[in-house]
Amino acid sequence: MEPRFFKIPVCVGDVTLRVAQGHFATRHSHINYFIDVTRQQSCLQEAEAVAQQLAQRLPYAVVDTILCMDGTRVIGTCLARRLTQEGYGSVNQGKEIYLLRENVSSGGQLIFRDNARFMLEDKNVLVLLASITTGSTVEKAMRCVRYYGGSVAGIASIYSHLEEIGGVKVAQFKDYADGSVVDCATGGKTAMELSGSNVLRFELADGTSIIVRPSGTEPKIKVYILTKGKDAAERDANVKKYGEWVDTLKK
Image (cartoon, rainbow, N blue to C red; front, side, top):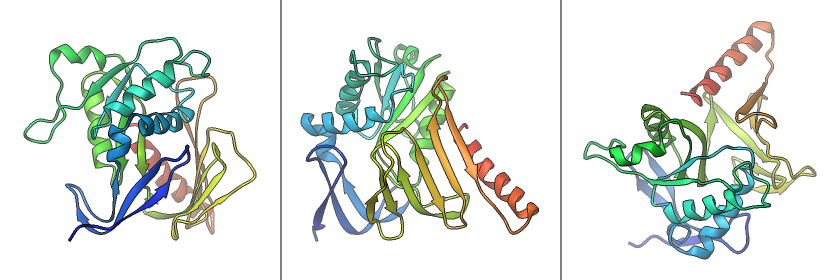
């Protein structure tokens, strides 16, 4: 039986994602919702709108190459144009950004021919994906970039989902760029008073807050952990646990 799709809006223009509820199996997981991003991957108008939204979150990321995964090359082209556009306020304006498409071996590994390796070696690479669910594809891409001598400048996707951090459920997600607050249990979205800052905040079920933002002076991402415990030992254990999760982002 064909899945029945419904539409959910994204933050820019009239672009919507088509979503079907059911049971779907991927290489890495079983999921209850299928996100169809075909239009965003192939329609220039929608690719431009997605690129606009992603570029707003990447003003301080130095990008030399965009690695286009999951058939996102059209979006990658639009994003490179946005990031290098004069007067846009990006640190990449006026420079050249390479576009690199994924090549997968018969064993499922990412590989690149010799004539493409210069786009990775000593380059700041932005990994662009259609969606992020388990993070397995992201991890594979990050390992590949580093294997070929590059540095991961960031991860960008049309749709991403993070259920837990350090084994603790994410209760609420705040995006200070557009002032949105998402209840992760219900999916409900509300607005807060603050907006216009490139900051993400994850509120966890145990009262911990994890804040992520780019540095204003260096090409790096800063992560702040705000946590507590019933005593100093529990507090320190939380800092250690969440610090280990932050460390996985650098590997």
